[in-house]
Image (spheres, rainbow, N blue to C red):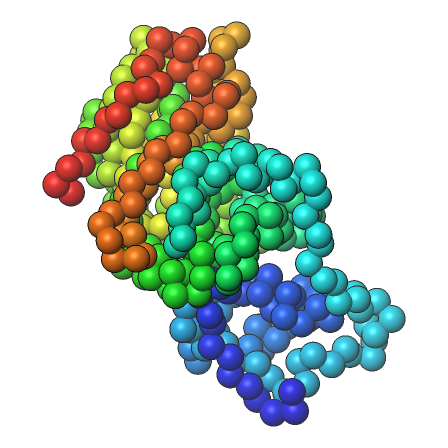
Amino acid sequence: MSAVTELKIKVDDADQRLDRWLKRRFPVLNQGRIEKLLRTGQIRVDGKRVKSSHRLEPDQTVRLPPRIEEVPAEVADAAPAIRERRPVTDADAKAIRSWVIYKDDDVIVLDKPPGLAVQGGTGTERHIDGMLEALEFDHLEGRPKLVHRLDRDTSGVLVLARGAKNAQRLADSFRHRNARKLYWALVVGQPKLARGKIDLALAKEAGPSGFERVASGDEGDAKRAITLYDTVDLAAGRCTWLVMWPRTGRTHQLRVHCADGLGTPIVGDGKYGGGESRIQGEGISGKLHLHARSIELPHPSGKGMLKIKAPLPPHMRKTWEFFGFDANANPDPFPDA
């Protein structure tokens, strides 16, 4: 590129960090150079200066400076080689196919296990995105496409699109909040109100920690975050089973809202709950107890609604048994919300 270039973000590239998108497109870029180009305004999104952690959205325009793909002389010897996508191992192909809980010509839905990232990043070699070739199933448009994300440690329903048109339609449903996602969470203690709405803006902490925090409304990078919640069951005041509906899709929204908004951190969430997220009991795992239980959204074919539920992962199922909760319950306390 010998002149300033503007690239429009496609659906396939949406909902990923700007720095990761840049590294995939220009493997010679390292984090330091990306930060400098952003800091000096040479890289902009929709004409604005943004941080490397900015999440890209469909149809946004990324402005790139001339010769961005050239390797600076001082780092030429250290520039990484362009890496092709790694082939999917037989073990990973078998695993991801076993996670399919729904499939038709337009959509594939996975029950994502906890502890597995949806997309790659620094130090993350194994992730859902790297296994998608195993889900082509002879479809004419090849590998399915990611249209939303779940945190690494969150389990449950993950929707994939088959083909670009379906990806656009599903992405539009998420962007326009036509998708109804219900999560199950086990929190430490009991919220003061059994049912309610958490409306607290979030902002990212300065530095590389990746923490989100409750922000004041006048902070420049604060983003409004809204969660509806309701109590399903209690365990002798020790824990509460909540069903939660995030009306916005901020990073770690439910985890921050539980810990800082309700004062009841999710069990196993050491990042936001620290030591308070631990509870004693032989049947209680130290893993995060947050599960994307169900999703309901317009089917991309235009024919009705897609409604999918995912069973609890083993560690949460064991906890539910420990407290005598009904893992087959189907609470839906927000019919008119």
